[in-house]
Image (cartoon, rainbow, N blue to C red; front, side, top):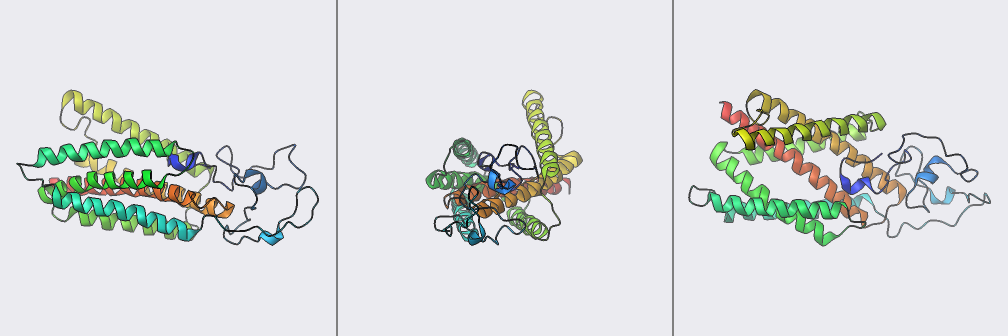
Length: 303
């Protein structure tokens, strides 16, 4: 299956034979003895294991044509969980550093808030463009991903400062803690098997995400035309419900991303794919953080 993040959607990370079908049988006309995982592996050379994706046994692979054991498959240059963790830490670290600098160097008092907002919006728009460029590139570009993270950090730093200093004191830290709680909770639930990522799960999440984004766009359109909050999806009781749905969708996206990382490791994806994993996870965590920040602002406004 494909991830909600476009950076994974072209890679074919799936032990379910790709997004076209989960648990399909081997296609007719395929090589005799070729399993579903062999046919679905986009990287080839290393068979995806049945069950535990980490328990690879390259010595057990059989030559499809002759039935003889193949030479041991080297794991050099293959993506590992350590690679994903390190790249994700680097990307998020860059984002946090630039967010902290933007918070400290771009004041949001009445005299400077317009200038700070302008810089934040400019950085956010450039980050969005860079994110789209990387999403459609065939290979990961670490420089592009880190630049995206740095600019996204500037945007988040200013927005967080505005909410924290002008709307709800301590909102940024609360949003960070909420994001961390969702990440850990989804990771534990995924590894424990409480969340099963399959075709039905993917279809539900994507349908919900498209509906969420469509309502967001409609609300923005009405806000531009009529002013205020448009249809009310960003304030009041309806805004709270909408924010909770956004966080739940972010949690579902995390489960999809964990599935893609797991499949990439199982397939022996190239090491540079770890940067794409870091990029996708960063986008999802930013989504969740922003929804938490908005929810906290709404609750503070209702006090």
